[in-house]
Length: 404
Image 1 (tube, helix red, strand yellow):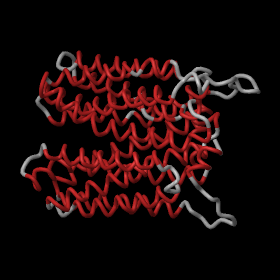
Image 2 (tube, helix red, strand yellow):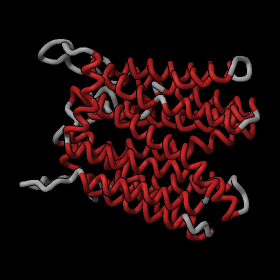
Image 3 (cartoon, helix red, strand yellow):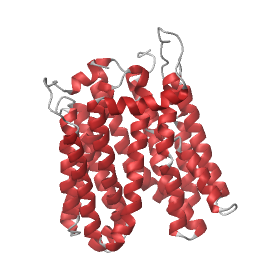
Image 4 (cartoon, rainbow, N blue to C red):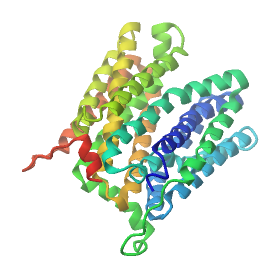
């Protein structure tokens, strides 16, 4: 099974789908602004696409975990997500906006499949001893997508119009269908088919995360941390305007952050034994707090340095989070754990983006200090989940593969 399906094929499919996903949000924002002429209407479309992920993630994970061929269900989710983008594009300006937003929200239910749905299947593709390196490479596709997706949305909109950006994003998602469809299947469980109800399956993902201390700790930390990241992203246009005289410079700042994340994870892919995943989750969060506080100066040089520091922290944080999940998630719950975790992170990000706008209007440095405070709060959450134990486990990247 591992020999027939190559890691490169998985990475190509995941990178393409995630780039389309990262592109879809900004593209939808641009086309909404172009059609309605209202920033609030455009942001409502983006909110509809992201906020519903909290509900969709556990459901997608439960279905994937029940399937003997989860790749085919993943392919179906990709196709449905792309179709939703097309329906939203065609409907915008022709039918009432609340209906269009509701349609976007339906597509957003499948959003976690583009992220956690792929990562949950990674142990089906590689042998256990190759999982640490594959995890770093998988995280690398997130960083590459975050780097190219928004930039591609802006470039396509500039050259061919805002609607073309949505078309290109859904085309990228559809290009990932063959890689998803042909993902390796699983051998049937020795006890036969699923005997629990779908409701029990939905709850089991949350229960597994909440009852496994390393999973709970890493998930809580990443979700609260992503609230701060959401605040930062919303602040980048006014930051660019204040530091460099143009709000478009905010896109450049995000590009710097994504490029630093990409470089950090590229190093981890070559040297997966450099860092311990549990410790990395905490340290990277503290580094993000430092970076966001530095960004509050809004001076050009410290601001660019802050974006580099934030990227160097965010990339390893994601890789470490994946490593903890791969290590701790049982096979029968892996899909639920990854998609539930992805949906919670997306919700945290959406929450940060929602409060970031009013905060930035009130005070840009104040908003960034709130973002830094979110990172400190995430670190406090990490420590709160770390109760004294009678024995200390030697967490390592190698164990992340061996224990799966």
